[in-house]
Image (cartoon, rainbow, N blue to C red; front, side, top):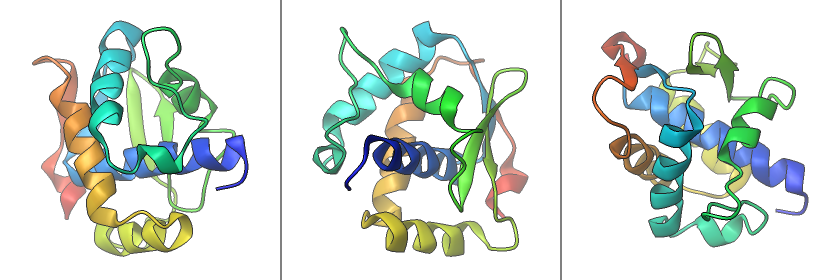
Length: 139
């Protein structure tokens, strides 16, 4: 991917849609929870190299900026809202999650299953009570 904005939009969209697919409606906006969770997930994600501008180290972690910029940089599929925590949302809700995931795969060249893997690893870094589940999201 050619530009920083496109890479960050892709990661923001992919993570938002993956989190929704896991049935999570909201999560803590505390950087002390979000950044370590993203750092661990990103470090082990095999597709991270396709997004060389995205950093997830102790010295520089881009995830909060990616999420905060998401409402201004809305991609065609998903985004993040900052209302009572962080909330992933679908922009194109006329499609099922899997259809939206297939579109994401087509747009960015990363398999839908890989975005879901990243989201699962990200969510595994949160403590109990730092996420709010809503299984109706996975329908």
